[in-house]
Length: 555
Image 1: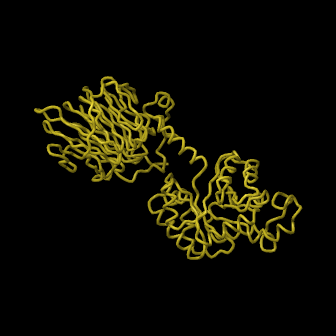
Image 2: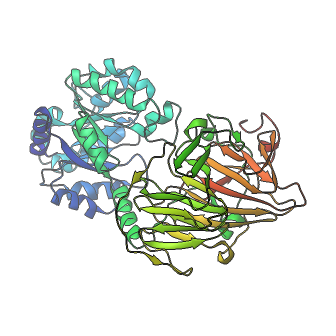
Image 3: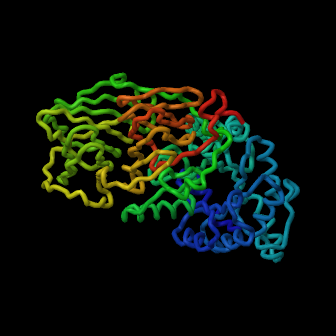
C-alpha cells in the first residue's frame, strides 16, 4: 500500500481537482509502467472481465511500486477471499462490481478492513513486507484502503441515497454499459434515459460528500465528463486506446476497417459460406418501430435549388435513424450549387447523364453510376441534358440532413474512369466495370460504398439485381435500411406481412426488423440498398421468422 499516493489522490479530490487514470485489461506490465511514467494519478487492473490471472495482476502492481500512481484491482465479484488476496499483493484498493445495496457495500468494506472493525485476515505478503511490518501496516491500512463500488444497475441507482450514507467508501464509479443493459438497452454504452439516471445518482453522491468516476469514450467525452462534475476520470481502456490509435493510422492510409463479432458480411464469400441461420432473433435486437413502405410522392417534397426537387422517401418524417434517402429530379440543364455536408453522401444516377464536380475533380456519369462523397468535401451536380430531366437516388448518413453552401473556386479537371479512390476522397463506381457478388440465390450485387471502400464513411450500400426467383435469406440488421426498387416488381416479406413494391417505391426496414426481398416475376428486379451502418452486415435467422407472424421474437 502506497499511503502517500493515496493521500495525494484524496487531497486532489477534496480540492475538486480531477484525477486521471487508465483501465488496464492487457497482460503486459509495460502498460502500467507507461501510465506511471506519464504521471497518471491511478490505474485500475481489470480482473473481472478478460483473461488476466493473478501472476499478471501482481506484475502490474509491481510496476506501480514506489510511485505516486494509486493501483486498484477490479475484482470478479464481491468476495472476501478476492478482496483479501488483491490487497495482500499490494493493491491500494479494490473496485467491487455490481454493488446494489448498502449491505453489499458494507460487506465489501468489512472484507477490506482488519478486525475488530472488519474481517480481513493478515498475511505475510507484499502488503506487510512479507511479514516484516505487521504492526506498521495494520496501523495505517484501514484508514487508507480504497473500496470503490461500481454503480452499474438500475437497482443501484434506486438505492443510491442509502448507498451514499455508507461510511468507509468515498469514491463511486459508474458503469454506463451495464446500467444500460439493466435499463433494457443491452449493447449500448449509454442507452436512452441512462445519462439522466447517472446524473441524478451523481448529484446524490456529491451532496453526500462522495466523489464520482467514469471511463471516457474519447477526448470530447472526457472534457464533457469533467464538466459534468466527475473527478475520477478514466482516459479509457488500454485496448480501446490502442485500437483508436490503430484506426486513425490505418484510416490515413485508406486501410481502416470495422471489427465485427457475429454478423456476416454480405460481400464476403467465406463469411456467407459459414452462415448458419439462428432459430429466432436475439432478444436484444427486438425492434421498436414498424417497417414503412413509401410510394413516390408520399414524403416531404422540397425544391432544394431552382429546377432541383427532392422527393424524400426515408428520413426523420418516418422515424428513420442516421439515414435519409430520396429521389432527386433535375430539370433540363439544372444545377445543384456547390455545397458540403457534415456527413457522407451517396449519389446514384438513375436516368440521364450528369456531371459531378468534387472540389474541381469532374466526373461524367451515366445510368446506375455512383459517386460517394465523404463528409466535408465540396461538390456540385449538374444535368448534362438541356432537353431531358435527370433522376438521381441520394443517400445521406443523417436523419436530419443540412448543407453548407460553398463559394470557392476549384481548378477543374476531367477525371478518367480509372481514377482510384484517394484517402479522404470521393469514390466513383461505373457500374458496367464494377465487380459483382451474390449474397443470395439468383441475386447479383455491386458495392457502391462502405467503410472499407471509403474509410470513415458512416453508411454502406449498393445496387442489387434479382432474376426470377432471386432472393435473400430471412435476416435482420443492427441498423436501419432503405431499399428503393428501381426496376421491376419486388415482394418484401416482413415478419408475416407481404408488400408489393415497384416504380421507385422505397422500404424503411428499422433495426432488428426481420425481412427479405424476392423477385416473383419473370422480369428482372433491381434495387438501390442503403444501410445506416459502415459495413453490409446481416444476421440470418430461420425462414419462419420472416414468413409467419408472431414467430420472430419467440425464445
